[in-house]
Length: 291
Image (tube, rainbow, N blue to C red; front, side, top):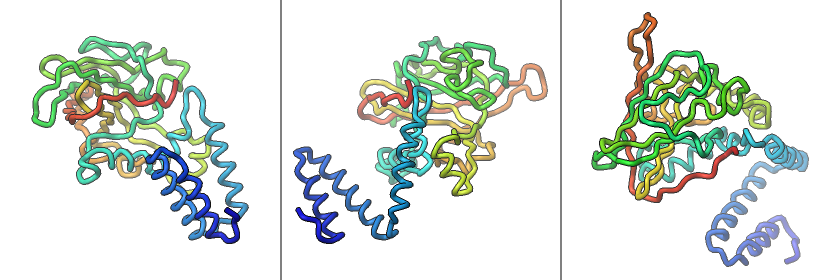
């Protein structure tokens, strides 16, 4: 097709996309082309701005490595990851969901641990944490044999793959629920931390005058056959950044009660009790954002 007007550019691109025999590919790319071309028309995108966009996308790739996924971070900071999560859980976005972002720091093959074990694999100063969890189905029945994969940042706000002072797989572990659907473990209370800001996502946050700190949280990935894999985070209710999380990850059901026991004594510790509800569906592990 000879392109004789700006409208013809859209028509020709849509015709080319439609040649695919993959119906879902045609649906997705056709919609992308229509919305992208409409965005360009609405904003009257300049050639200089298009060149900036090319450079920005190239920098996302250049900032990605074995321990950091800039594309996932950029998606999070635009609210895209949370939107996809909400649309695919909680009755298709009609109700709140206990699902949340996977985040950029999940790793496969974390150590398998016995219930009650510690996640610490190297000295990690901080307030001791006891977490007790219950995994149940929609009817309230305990789910036995669910694998619960946990990972979190240290009290200085770093995951072990970011911090040379932590042992490999520190603050990571996988537990299996018993017949009562329960698991528990010990660790240290995590701290909030800034998302990486040395790449293009950081440039965008600064341009929008947004703060980079995520509220403190524990990550959970709960897996068992015959259930939809549950990926979630649990935040303390007193964190100052619940309202301005830069990746829009906080929903009401993800705010837990982190209680302090024996406060003011040498045996002070933080205790979290939390129930996880699994829905019927496909048991599928995500692609790890990092190696």
